[in-house]
Image (cartoon, rainbow, N blue to C red; front, side, top):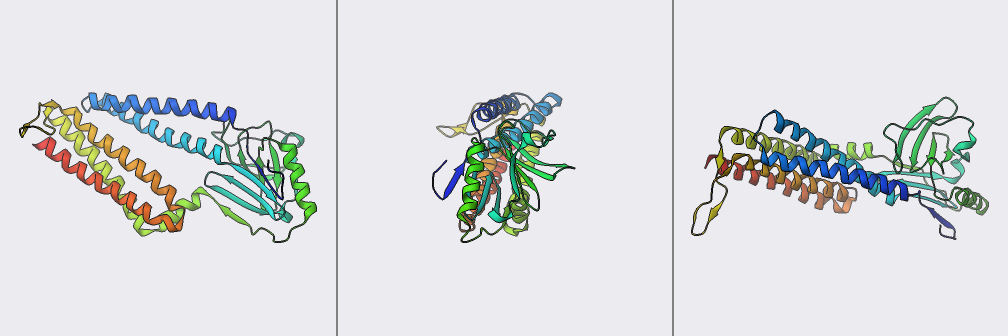
Length: 303
């Protein structure tokens, strides 16, 4: 906490970091093993099972990685003009005079239901209870949970120093507001909706997904229809040693990793209007890389 007219608090991180970090390692391990198996087996029922595991591991890694980064960047800030809550892509600004009360969650007299898929380090989401209405959780632990009531909803937050947070709120009230903080709310869903309205971004992202699916389908068909392939040449220019046809599956794996990393970086830059050109370059480059990999797949599979 900073002792000034601005107080900045963070949620407890230690337990959430360990749990989310271990979960991330497990999901990445599942993804890695599945990708290796995809390049070693011919397309069939077992190959399809490994593909499903790779998709599950990839999606889980992205979700857990986001929650881990969001935990370390989460802040609860108070000054004489308002309260600022930040957790990942979720941002909420509340004028100080709009806060009706703040109290510990264990003083409500009834247990609070937690959001689905909530665990230490990532207690996120909304629940509705008859006594309080809608409660939005932006917390990492239940032991330090504070309820912040506003006319629209109640926020459940977990500053590592709940008593100091309440004390800072009272001091900010006593100081009085010179320039009330304008209400502001940013949600991940709104970010996705804004992204979808951008015709250029939408075309690039949809095109990338279609190209990746096309590359995966083409590589699967070619790997299933032949036993060996030729990939590259050796000096002097002669065809290289034939390789098992399932090695073609390396191409969609490389394409997926390239496109996925560009997609994530592009989403990061897209939040800032002045950096959206970088997003277009990353997404366009990912689409171009997939096109080149499709050409390489055709050359290797039909050559």
